[in-house]
Amino acid sequence: MARPSTLLRRWSAASLAAPWLLALSATVLPSAHAALFEDDEARRAILELRQRVDTLQQTTQRTSEDIRRTGDDGSQARRSLLELQNQIDTLRSEMAKLRGQNEQLQREVAELQRQQRDIAVGVDERLRQFEPIKVTLDGQEFMADPAERTAFEAALAQFRAGKFPEAQTAFTEFLKHNARSGYAASARFWLGNAQYATRNYKEAITTFKTLLTAAPKHARAPEAALSMANCQLELKEVRGARKTLEDLLAAYPKSEAASAAKERLAQMK
Image (cartoon, rainbow, N blue to C red; front, side):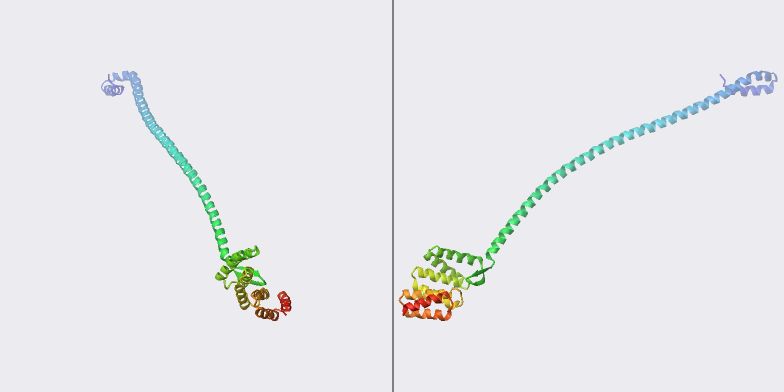
């Protein structure tokens, strides 16, 4: 069947050859013209519909791709969050471990500091045992090692306890190692008395003479001279005893020993 546009062209040509066809065309043309316009509109409608379909397809495709990408991005985001959470948990665990190690180190440092303080105190105490100390004895002030003081006081304690042989040994040993000590004069005085107590008169006389020669101004010197005279009397050395007592009166006239020397001299006449 011929399309309306074709029929229109045919009718137009025929009208030029036969006038009678004009009358017929007047009745046929309107319907053909209407069909022509309907066919163009249908084409336009179909084209528009195809464009809309294409547009919808493209939009749908983009939407699908966006949804897929969104889904992929969401999955990636969830994976990233999980990894981040795992890292946070790991860091928390490491921090807890480090905190525990730090607390242990602090305890160890505190213990080491305590030990160092104890060691320092112990060292100071041991050093103080060797540091010279100021001593006042028999009216004299001098510096002495703690060991000297300990040895002297130990020997003197034996003398005062009546252990004269032990005291004699202790003072002899002390003077052997501390002949120039500030304790030396006092040590000789007590050594001479320990020798006198054990009846070692000759040794006592030697000890007292040494004291009087080395420290004639010592506080114990007058007593040492009197004790020496007593030793001489025990040995029946009357002449020597008289000389010792006279020297005592001349050297120490205001001492208590001088009063005792006067009495002894009076008894010897």
